[in-house]
Length: 399
Image 1 (tube, rainbow, N blue to C red):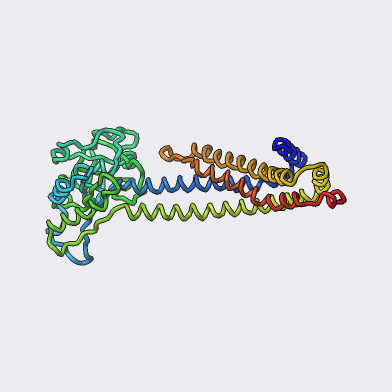
Image 2 (cartoon, rainbow, N blue to C red; image 1 turned 120 degrees about the vertical axis):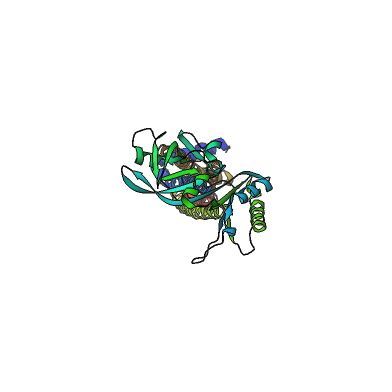
């Protein structure tokens, strides 16, 4: 019998038992949809987590002085603008560098004091922290030189302090000083308070921080490498520069995002593998279901098989017929499951934040189809082989 005829016989057999075929394919549908959804969710969560970590600064190296509890640090240990300038001039692979000092402060809102985070920043801070100015402008060279008491505030603080009024040009009482608001900003990707920028934050030029701290020392020095491959070199060179400019007993905590990003990727990979294994278990169970149904089908169609063999159908045709039936059940279930697995992320996309996109993995679609189809063929082989081996004389006697 030609392949076309074998395919026709297999399709007719499935049509004769539509409900059985549909129920058998449900397990494959669930397994295929699970694989696509699991990989999609894993990629989306990994992308989200990594974007939140990178929001603190891509390829960033930052340095803080190690302070011992109960021990006063000499001023010669403190980070300075000279250290920042030395880092800028000595390491050519940097794309940006900056420093800042942050302290808790209060602002006067509607006659009441409200706690805020006050941050004094140097040039390069906006580029490193990827700040987006939504109203007004950022600091210019004159502002950075401390020629005027100006500040930028977060959107949350703007609403709290000025309500629906335009905050640009308004005065803000910070401690004992009055600053003019020249801009409103937010982080490009929220860090949920794990960085120095909080919901209600005021940033001012670093030269104005001496009015609050009494000195011009940096709390944190930041350097941004040009590529991930340069981070280790930048980390090493920053340490060398600081040790050459400060006493030997001074200690600094030099950190990068490489370790955190690596840990996040490993955790995401581990969760993905675990969830994919669960999806494969679902496919395994559906494969066992396919085998059971096919064995029942072979038993029910024993006389049919005997008749076909008696009129000359070779063993390969019988084997091919039942394998095709198993493939149609598993392959059809795989296609349906994949479509469901793709439709759900597309529908959910409308409910997600605007900056978060759900990536569709082509590999997961291919893997889901191949694994599901191969599962059907693998578990369909035993009943198909059993049908092909039936003796025609005994089959015709079967009631």
